Image (cartoon, rainbow, N blue to C red):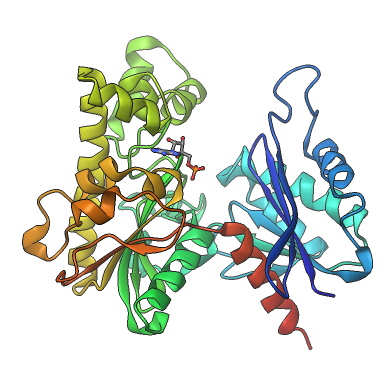
Length: 380
Ligand code: AMP
């Protein structure tokens, strides 16, 4: 019993990985994409599960499967850690659908399909919000009417928790210390992006809020915005709340500013002198810098700044741009180390720096598998 199957489903995709936990080797992995998007594509996440099972044929040995680990986007304030799935947990994930209307239904359909495909294997839910359940009340509370907060659950939950947790643990190991001894700022910069302030191994603030829209500029999301903009656009253009939500989530960010949601395109265009791309890059990096400033103030002492995910792991331009002008705070990159391309965990700060600046490739699948086994180990 040394294998774990990890299922990481987005609203229209399923990433899967079968891991041998003895040596953490990938026995199989892949992605099912464009689920439910067009005629002829995979109809829903249950049909997606059949595609995954087909791909695993011959590689998955049911007698050795210890657990199936599921990423679930929204755990509300109910789930503070990985949780063994039963009917009650499924009901709770269903009750949280209003907070994550695209993701939780997809996660749930996949969980149900996996439970019927592997009825004898324990299934564990690992929530994207769980790591941030340690936020103090003053960091997660929005200054809005009580009924919105208590009856409607409007508060900061935060996301990318699995990635922030994994990266903060790896970063502490790179410093040769226990997570409980380290304060750091983790920058998860992928297509979605968020910052996390980690004090002594625990998340104490994060830039995504009730939904993943708040905070940094992302591939297609605006990030922080005056909340009055939505009402203004509704009045001026007659668009519905749904349409405006869609625009802020899917047609804003880098895509709106530079015409592509891919940082590689933006970086290339900016290097060629295209003004829109230059502005997009500046807005993107400036937003990150502001959050670093805020989280330095929140944490007091910061031992490390860690970059992760597609942009954070690969874009030297963004890493340098985000930390520009922070030298007097003890934070800087060595141009030579920063320019070095690598898939490895590495330091990019100069050797004399007060604060370590690190690149830590994230691995949500390994983190989910580890947490799944942790839960089973804790069973009586
Ligand atoms: P993720 O969500 O972590 O998979 O990150 C995906 C994003 O990473 C893509 O949309 C790109 O913008 C970005 N990315 C991937 N490779 C590079 C690269 N070599 N340079 C800059 N950005 C990259």
